[in-house]
View 1: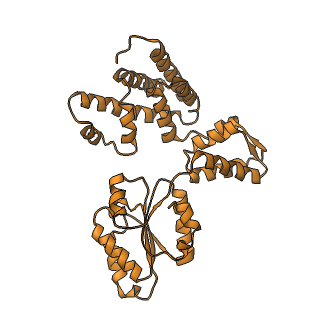
View 2: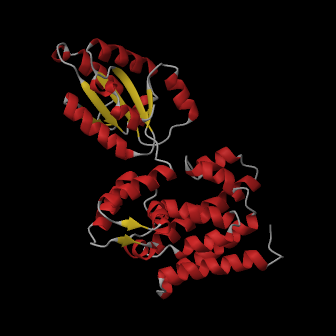
View 3: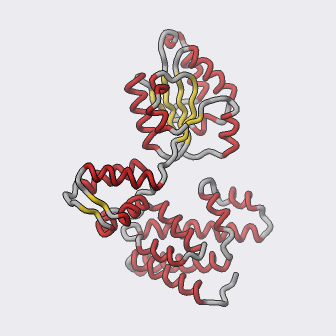
Length: 326
């Protein structure tokens, strides 16, 4: 079940037992937190504040015999996978008390972890990011209520620059609606919203390593307002990719190379595709980015223009130099 569907269901009024919420969209988790507090006076804790066994002791205490305890444990990934027997006991005990425990994982867990938890017959609720079509309708409907129109290109750019994060998107929509203007175009988006750092960095790197140079050029032109953040991200990821290539060339298994370089999902999943790029392209990109970083920090060059120039030089070389080292 999707969390946004659960929030509209009757079950939220009478939850029972243990629930597991996983996924990257915190907007709906915030809504769940508010709803549980309002409906059940729920206690909200963070994963580093309490463990599963602490909850067992708490629910076993006589003070909870005649209560209907409801808890939400946010960022609980460290507590969940250690003791499945304790979770089953917690599920049984919370049902005996007519209560509920919601565990929230702030990132997408591995298929193995989720498979093990589903085998415990615990309800799994997905807090998934909204798809592009739904986000576009949400933006247009919200602005239309305020008598504001937005161009399709500006809508796409707004989604890109908020990384599809609903909390950020809502904040930016409120900011845009306070401007007192009746039409929003890409120039307004470019001037007011810097690109969302990590999301934009990975999109740009996807295009550079995948030789989609037209898209790479377009993404680089959108880096205004966050050039240093994007350059730093590109440099860090490309360096680790270069080192991954090097370790594999020395006979070290890919999985061990990932561990050595502290590569974890979702970035390690990206690296599976990045490793298909020619080593010569990776090395050239690292050289270009290192030079751009040096120009900005030592010669005080403009970050945006320097990054764009570096990307253009890289594209020209990759497109037209037939003697590159693969």
